[in-house]
Length: 135
Image 1 (cartoon, rainbow, N blue to C red):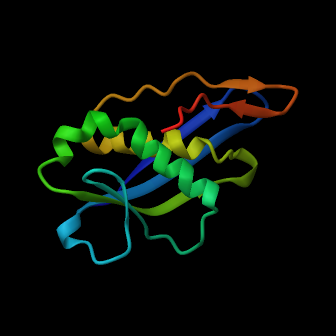
Image 2: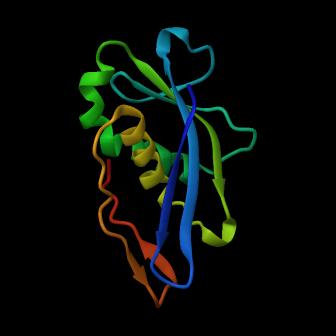
């Protein structure tokens, strides 16, 4: 069943607003292309437009941010997280936010806690600094 998660970050005159809609599908029932992110956790896109390589990378990073917390729930059977829609306003978007939005979706879908690390706004560069680990 599809569900939507809403990520919002506003600390300055502009912010980051991303809605992600996705679903969990057992790998044994999935019929499309998917990429294994970590053991037992696969990622697929089911959207009508092409994401950039960076945007895909940030979605995968979001999955990795919470993969340890959902490990026990995934180990029964490998699953595919299939993203079916991403909504954002280009004026309120920074691609790094996709990682937090994806991790938030996972937390919501699996009933786990995810508190995004604090994000600071860099006034000189007019960008948010997301403290994302290399995962």
